[in-house]
Length: 156
Figure (cartoon, helix red, strand yellow):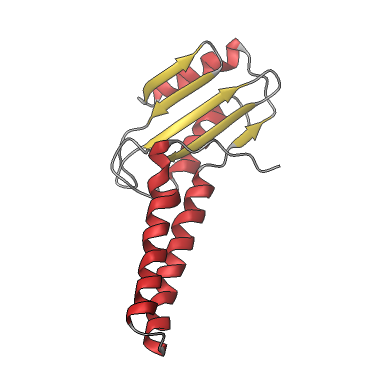
């Protein structure tokens, strides 16, 4: 089952606004160039960019589900890993969810890591932070962040 987190208003730029802009540019080039072959050559890259931005952002919103219970002990292990890696804790809700920012590196401006605890599972999401400079890709940093949490929870 593909799970993902609910997009927030901050995610709309890459999920909806930028793809709509590129689709508008594709439509504009077709209409202004009167449906000739040049207009199609210009419209295809705009359409591909719209699809790429939308689907990459959808991928960024997917979560990794771990078969670990969301206990207080596991919550504390995640908090310890976050502090050890010097991430900034934005929000921590009564052993049910953690939101944390990572530091910026040469790979990205920083990521937003969301860890949600339920009775049977723990879900993790790492994506480019919508609260920092806009980016779509993190060059592998999302997977590194998820690996850090998995290692802290002793899941490999």
